[in-house]
Image 1 (cartoon, rainbow, N blue to C red):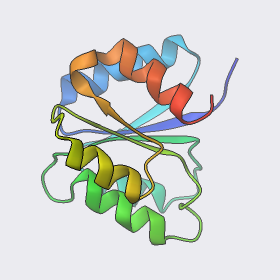
Image 2: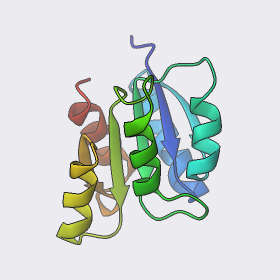
Image 3: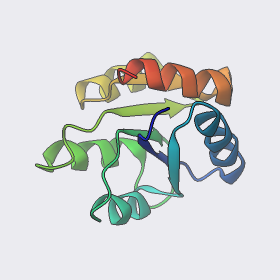
Image 4: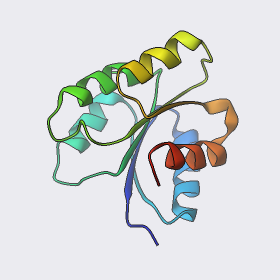
Length: 124
């Protein structure tokens, strides 16, 4: 049984809820944030996360901006980040990987596949 904590960052509450269920089935704890700013508030706390799964398109602070900030943070830069989006544009995928994402996954795969692929991409 895993005790790894996953941070799910997505402004789509339904998607976050379904992802939480799939991670729970795999014995992972989850916390959710509805945008990048809320994610940063959570990440600045003392809790450590084994994986951050973030949407690309969000209000306030999007996934690419969050990824860039995490890459510059001494404590958080080692946490695997998986980007997800409905946008299949190769440029988005390339940019996410360049900024340090472990993977870029399509939300159209569905929550179950997303959670499985995110865990594999981050080494779990």
